[in-house]
Amino acid sequence: MLKRNELREFKKRFQMSVEKARANKFVLPYRMSVPRTNCGFALIPIMKDMAAHRKTGLMNLTFAHKYEQHLPKCIGVSIADDVDGWFTAEWCYIEGAWEEDPEMERLLKESNPFRDVKMRELPRYTYRETQ
Image 1 (cartoon, helix red, strand yellow):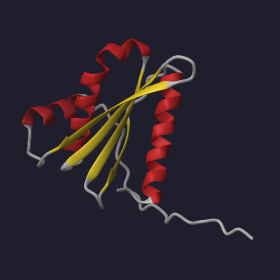
Image 2 (cartoon, one colour):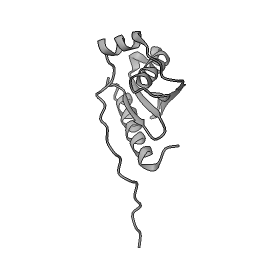
Image 3 (cartoon, one colour):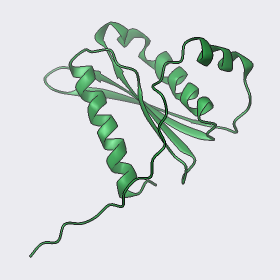
Image 4 (cartoon, helix red, strand yellow):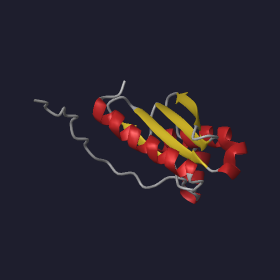
């Protein structure tokens, strides 16, 4: 149950993921967390040569984002280019209490698959006035 300004940020990341998947360009996953709902989102563009491992990657990266941000729930989506301008999106939902995991700590320290986190306050969603 995201607010409009949160949905706008999700849509930006979703669209960037579609563009990168269509360009077959490797980028780190896009992600965001919404403290108000205690939910995180990981959006993963999939290159053509990674398609065979997309489900495993989706689950691992969704769990890694949930763990790194100390969240009780996280939604992941992998996005791959398809035929005739279409794309395929596969979703993953993980929910459970956050628990310390030394192995995950080690993996995230050795090779963190994410960009640095930036915290910011989203501006309110406004309507344009029509006359």
